[in-house]
Image (cartoon, rainbow, N blue to C red; front, side, top):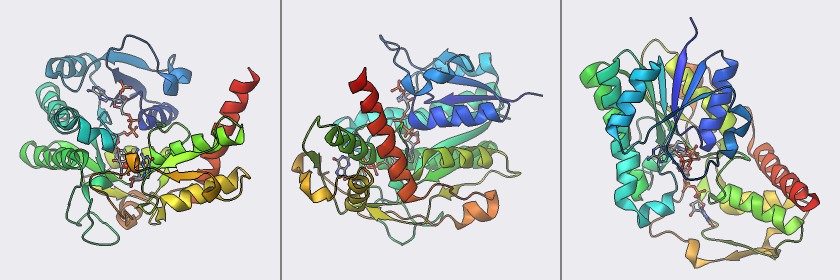
Length: 325
Ligand code: NAP
Ligand code: GDD
């Protein structure tokens, strides 16, 4: 029997890669979208004929319950969230509504409609924040450093709680940063690859960044959505860290990106701008993916260097098409 998956956050980076992946696995894929006045869904433009859309919002319990009843999925991937860390200081209450309470609304809808539905919650390495151990693993205590991180800790624990309280097949994937040419341009990796491409095409001369010393464990989003699916195919529900096990600084990313474009040293272009420094920083993230390898058979396929190259070349080609048009 063909399985049905419902994805919240289908218009986002991960939603688009997950939809592609599930279609290759033979799923009927249904995406929840919220109403907007313009229909700009560029990440899934190539998939619109292959997926179904239903209207709903993480703020609205009725919409989620009704659409679950209508779609009747076997699997739900809850990827929707306010996902940009700096915005969470500007809109802390809204971030809590989307990113924390939104998870409870999805879980409540599942409980009401069909408790046999398997659900994946998009948890985050931001929960480790001011890290208490290196590398971070499933047992590492959380110490979030932003309203976003705090909201994700709530989302994680409510997922665990519904699993233990109601016997739901509810899992939390603790994913470290994952990037791609579809990453939002406000996140540092895409900001860098986009900036490098603009400089390459002579559209600008500088790139303004915040803290260059922050370190992240960066992987490729296409690899990470496979892990989400694997987590829902296991015999027992469990929480797993998904990471590469390698860490690089923002400076490393910038250096590699400028080199990949043949522009020489990043120092000739990057300007440190205090506007992009955060009230509280997460200095170092590096995950231990050994449980993912052991239990899921999951390993990342794309290296840091290949990821930077992929993102830089994609942005250079995009601007070349725009300039040539
Ligand atoms: P993203 O590109 O920012 O996408 C977020 C998605 O959530 C968009 O589809 C957005 O829809 C939707 N959304 C936001 N608020 C909503 C609401 N109130 N109701 C319904 N939909 C709403 O994020 P991503 O990088 O794909 O990440 C996916 C998930 O993984 C997020 O929960 C994120 O916090 C988490 N995560 C990401 C990473 C990472 O490195 N990428 C790492 C760990 C965890 P619109 O298009 O309408 O705005
Ligand atoms: N965005 C941004 N812009 N970040 C900058 C800049 C800049 O100009 N300059 C330096 N940084 C530093 C930030 O201070 C941070 O330490 C690091 O680059 C990464 O920032 P982001 O790319 O914005 O990602 P993030 O790590 O805060 O959050 C992402 O990863 C989380 C998983 O750890 C998001 O995808 C979250 O949704 C996700 O949960």
